[in-house]
Length: 268
Image 1 (cartoon, rainbow, N blue to C red):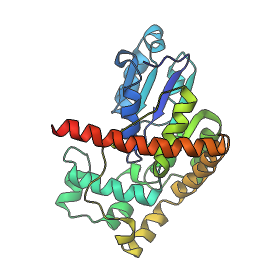
Image 2: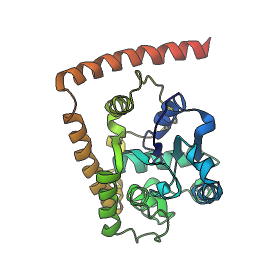
Image 3: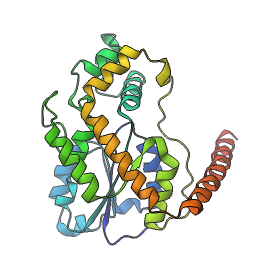
Image 4: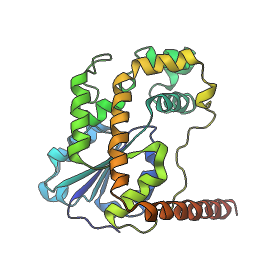
């Protein structure tokens, strides 16, 4: 199990390939020293109620919660996260809600027959209003739908630039996990894709007016994603160029073999 002087905080943005990264973290940290947050308000209050000694034992905190949890921890913290193209993320989020009975929006969407366009623009939930900016800035669901402003975007950019040890991209997942492995001294982080949204259309199969609508309501998230791409590019440039490219190609080939072997073992 990994050992850190600081507490690692994985800010898991929903539908941004975080479940796969979550599984990699679970392999490397002691469950007894890990806190997984699913109900951010309730569990953060429970965290604050713990003694300082109990909070100091936490090596990893992961889950869906806004930036700022380090304020309740006695040890230094290192944040990591992954962002995703907002249009792809909205499409994936919608189809995930459709097939997930336990999701709080499932009944509303299915009983009223809400389509993707109305899901994106209908004001159903604050998390659909530039949700990546909301989480990274730390404002969460406090501002009502439509009130996520450029002030929060600038705060999110500042947090990514100054407080995150690594900012990954869902669409460049393999490079992201290799950067994380290098940062924390992990062995090769082979994985199987987790929580992949099935039966969703490819981007090119979504009507242009729907894509335009999603882009219109996700303007701040689009800017934040572009900023994250810049940070990610800078992280890659700090690596040894050809050597990293060689390691990436080898990792992808070996991970394909790993995934196949795990699938065969699961089926036997």
